[in-house]
Image (cartoon, rainbow, N blue to C red; front, side, top):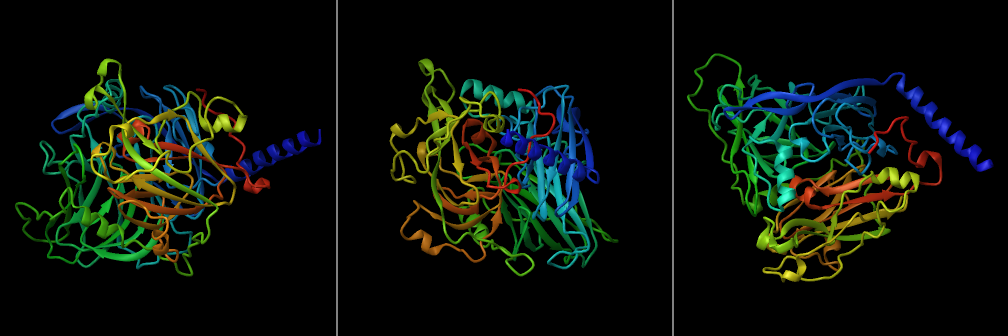
Length: 563
């Protein structure tokens, strides 16, 4: 009886907290529906938020709360994820389909409660159900607290730059067909900057995005890679860039001519209009080291205000080659947290839980070798040789209600067998993974280290952008080849490593991350190349509650969408 009374008090307290907090909370109202858009000489209906592509930008201040009511008037199930928002104690509004919620079905709605904490800078939101995020995404800009400024001079203006993919076909049909037949999905037909492909594509000149600048002024580009399946190089012709933030955290300024940004990542970049007044292309194209990829180039125009004769063709930046792994590595290795008194870091110096996770491409057998993958197989992918299977009800609900049979808690801390992970021509015995809905359970407040190890299974090594929900983490080390547990940790940066939510694991290389598991809940971890996530390169971390109500998950909202 006493336990029931305590549980009731805890429930009422959470309801009271939500009621008090909601009195001054802004609510945005979104409608998802099919909207007609014309790109690349053809017109089609795409799923949008309030008819916009990209979707509406949200501007909030650090530490604020807000709600978003999503009404689905489209044809498909959908959920929304607030990428990079830690959502302290609140996995109920994190968004991944069948991980923390059942989908919002056509005709239904759901109100997300977004709780900001220490994030500051550029984040984004996107659909987290099938491939609907191709057109359902937009900026989430976290400004400093009221009355505070940036740790760099105030820019003249701030401009979101959203990189995205454009498919002539129906993106949902593209992935459904690929999963049914077992082969590669169709590549995108274009990349876009703020919804427009740019001058280098057919029927696209008129809509090319233009950024107006005044000579001598500095501007803040808030760059978001919402592209489905390609990491990207980005440059502005004849202009230098200064990177000052990534994934909602500030870094020591990096002066560079280009950036490499993976799907899921965001970067805050300063650019000074210090060239002769004219038109200059900003441009972006893929960094891709294996297989088929979209090899087109998207452009926008930096246009100076003033009186001058525009060029017949703006200068185009000399972007790194598609396969330039050195350019990618030379950029990412320079990232360091700002790590000063105003923006300190808290890097775990000791580790309670070590995980060594291999990232692999795989195949699954098909009856009579009848699928479209290699040798009639079905394409798959895995983490530690486990290819994730989406459950029929969400993992969070099963965990919270104690429903058995939805998931297993035996996701391994290391791969089932060791081999030369980055070697050439690896044996076919490594091709087939185990399939299952396996999760890893972590103790509250434990210090966790994960080493992501790329592999060359199927001779398909590439850069994998790994994203963890509910957390930012410190990238304490990286390297090429196989991780050496004896020597590589001695080279870790435990002083000012970058704090991010998405990290690119280099082709035939490894990345080590650390974080403190102080956010109880159910949190998805996956590759942000959409085809890899669809094939099973995912898992779930469950962080147990602490010993007090303030270190435990919030109670669920009054309404949850049924499965």
